[in-house]
Length: 189
Ligand code: GLN
Image 1 (cartoon, rainbow, N blue to C red):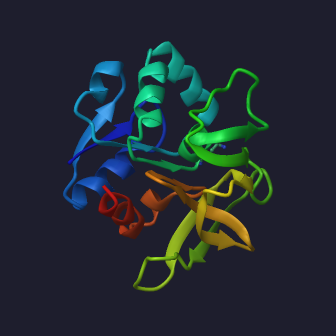
Image 2: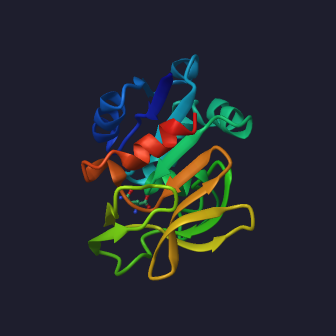
C-alpha cells in the first residue's frame, strides 16, 4: 500500500514516521507526478493558506482534486482538515479547498487564537482507552453535514470526522506518539 503525504509544508516527517512504523510504503507528494501509484493521501498540519498557494504554484491542485473527487482515501489533520473541507471560514480570500468532506471549518477558532491544548478523546471504534490529541491553533468545525460521522468530540464539538474514505482531525495525531488513528485510516484502505 503506497500512502502519499502532501509534502509542500507542515509536519510531514512525523506523519511519515507514524505510517512507516505501521508498515506503509510512504511517498512524499510535491509535484503531480508523485501522485502516480499513490493509493491514499495524508494531508498534514501546518498552514492551510500557504499549502493552498503551494498547491496552485506546484500544479498539484487540479490533479489532486481529481483524485480526491474520484474517491481516493485521505486523512487530513488540522490544516489538512481545512484543505479537505467544503467550506472554509476566516480563510484568505484566495484560499482553496478540495470540498470532499461536508464540513464548515473556521480557521484558528478552537480555543483562543494563540492557544494550544491537549485533550484525551474517546474515539468511536478505537479501543485501548482514550486517544491523546494535541490541538495547535486548531480549526473549529462549525457545521458537519448529514453524511459526516463524528467519531470524537471536545465539549460537544466535532474534532474527528469521517465521510466515506475521508477522515479528518482538528488536531495532530502525529505528535502524540499514539498510532491508533493512523492505524484506523490504514485499516480502512
Ligand atoms: N491555523 C492553521 C491553518 O489555518 C492550522 C494549524 C495547524 O495545522 N496546526 O492552516
